[in-house]
Image 1 (cartoon, rainbow, N blue to C red):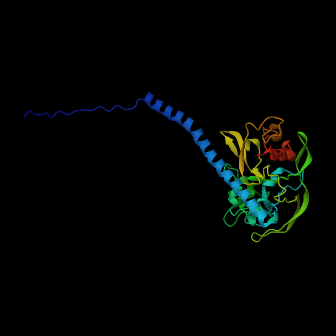
Image 2 (cartoon, rainbow, N blue to C red):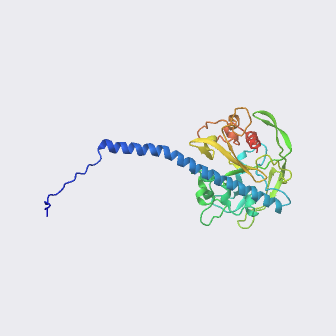
Image 3 (cartoon, rainbow, N blue to C red):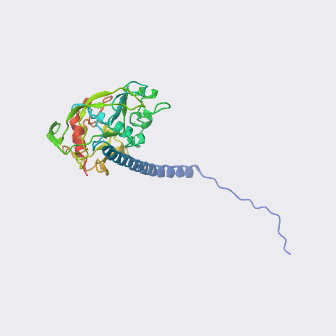
Length: 315
């Protein structure tokens, strides 16, 4: 038989060169640059859908509230025609920070919660809000402080004990009135201010209070073709829903319960009075330390601008 010699075979292992390693790293970086924006857009799309579901529940809750309250919808908190529109985001005011005691309201989302139209208060907060505790559910809860309350960590809210939500609540009448606006005199949904009485439930307790507010609307008086609640009208650059780093649009719910996402593009012609008309959001480049929301009088725009925006959300 032929014999096999005992020679050993030595295999050489070739490693990566520095250039090859740099090429691999560059490819990974390019793939990451492509994929990260895609993943971010996918995540925002999911949160936008969750936001729409929140507003859908708010719409259903308003119908339940009306059924239980002689067809009247919850009260809208807008203490006067010249008041800042951000107040339509409020559920109530507490006595101090920290506190669970209510001294103003509850109105709007607060009434919707305490009347069991919406049992989960997290529904009142858009999931797309990022690192802004004033518009997050967690900003108003802590161990021993159930929503709506002002826990100790709320001291960062400039000692202002308003319980904000992530949406504006503003049902609109089918009757109109002439309003002086930045675009001239327009016919907008009618606002009749009356003195309303509010009684905080127990718990959490608080003090009975009265406030000038728009008269509560019956569901039969509401304009079915105008938005009833939308994502909070904050600064332009802080718009909840973005495409990349640019404002993309807002969700809105209508009295019949359907939700529509209104995009910036196509609704942003200057002087059009559409929801994203730049005139209504002035100044679009905010001054440091000054809010530029359309309902903030300190921004250079005015509450009527917010009323036009709300009037612009249509099916």
